[in-house]
Image (cartoon, rainbow, N blue to C red; front, side, top):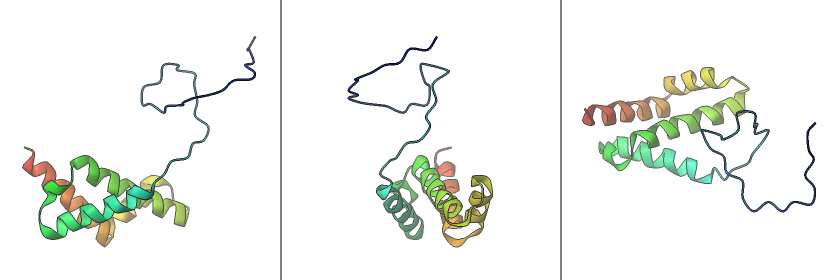
Length: 107
């Protein structure tokens, strides 16, 4: 039988990619995504200057994810479709170019 915990004070909750409990589920969470738009701008600027070393490969990937999530929220498209549409657009194409250029310099 499940136990019910009462009168708890939670100091911290961490979201991790490898949870300790395989049965644990995150139902909803919030985060401050205000820095995501800055990252998109930073990576786009790096590509336009021709200096992709100002961003990491992870930065380019996160910037693309941010644009895709924004598009999915706006249009109701699922994430993969929104991501594909972002890649077809100007900003997504520039970010992908930066990611590919970054990966090419990493070889």
